[in-house]
Image (cartoon, rainbow, N blue to C red; front, side, top):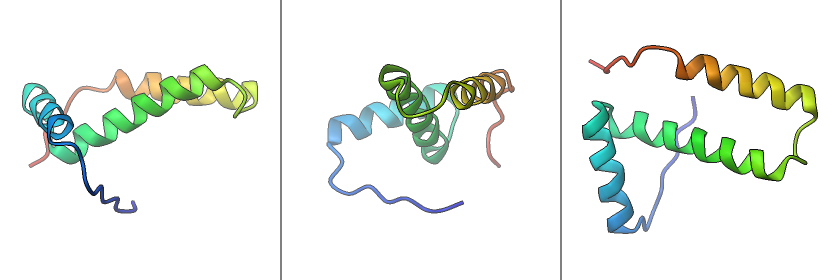
Length: 75
């Protein structure tokens, strides 16, 4: 998996991310990945033009399956 570095993150946004991480028992990295995935899914849902219907359906099913997995804290 590739690394991603964010610079100049608003301190209020960072604090919100960290609070969510603590509340869910996730690492910062897990929290950011979930937020990116869900945010991307929401925007893609609004756009509706970026993917063919079969691709949208497959993506929606995959994300749904991931949401159904139990939360597992990293060691």
